[in-house]
Image (cartoon, rainbow, N blue to C red; front, side, top):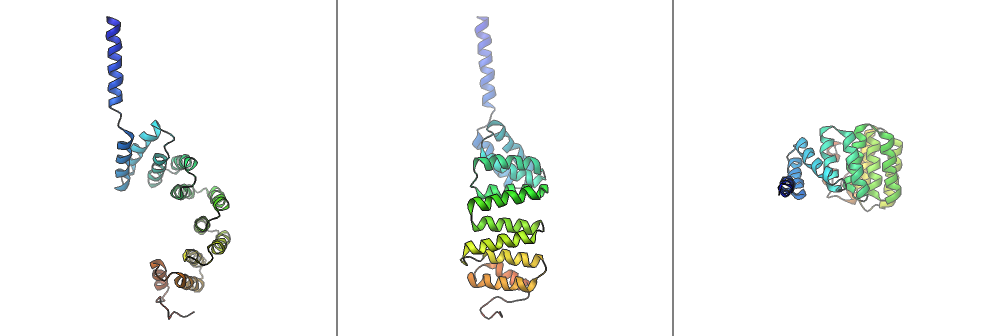
Amino acid sequence: MRATIVVLTCLMFIAGGCATQRPVTDVMASGDRALSRGDYAGAVAEFEEVTNRYPGDWRAQYKLGLALIELGDYTPARRALEIAHTRRPQENAIVEALAEAMFRQGNHEQLYAFLQQRVDKTQSVDSCLRLARYCIAIDDPDSAQHAIDLAMEWDGGRTAEPFIVAAELAQHVGDEARAMQLLQSGYEVNPHDRRIGQRLRALGMVPGPTMPR
């Protein structure tokens, strides 16, 4: 009889413990709310609860990485994002976040190698332009130009984005005349892109068909 009572007590304790554990969907939703309102510490606490229970949950690892970046905790952010990237290597949002964590860590060589590998693997315009923008950010204009040239070749003049990034590089090295020419070329491809109009105006030119060449 005594043994039966002990067993029942243990079972009740276990059941009570399980009852206090929130469903993962509730924890994720709470983390999402915290992330959206800028409560990054609260978001970390929620997403860490999920990753502690389910380390392979790539969504929780990704969102944990985002919150940690905002808190300036770049090493654990990178670790979480690397797990997410391993689980979902094709997710561009994860690639962007992981690259940002590496950049803020100051690991520029690893960042370049990661993004160049992405270019080699995907052979996409987006990957080239991502590499170019980070090369600009780390003050490597030669590598940025190479990535832009490749993006323009692969894009074939279909979109304005390569011209926008090329103009960013031109401005970075102090060549505003070249930046203006590139933005004009981008305007010809897509005159509805507001970024081009804003940047042309910032350089003193009113966008439109009568722009001087």
